[in-house]
Image (cartoon, rainbow, N blue to C red):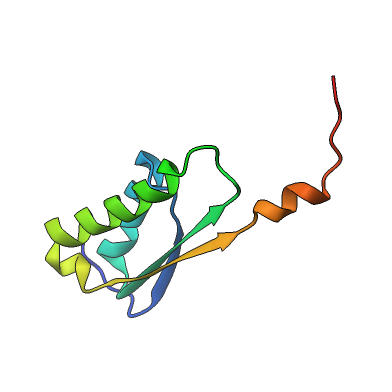
Length: 89
């Protein structure tokens, strides 16, 4: 089903299987789709790198979707951990 709503969508995108399916769903239905992710101080930066690789592959393999794929936004929330209460076991 390729129904365009002439609107945009923002997809919470981790680069994993579930969010990639959500991104594909949105790209199939909306004229413009942007992605957003969160840098929460992951131990392995590979999670953030995977997001870019998946976006690049989607654009390469699906040219019609590449035209609809807008920018990616990453919000740094790593400092939020400093505000929490840390309980030691």
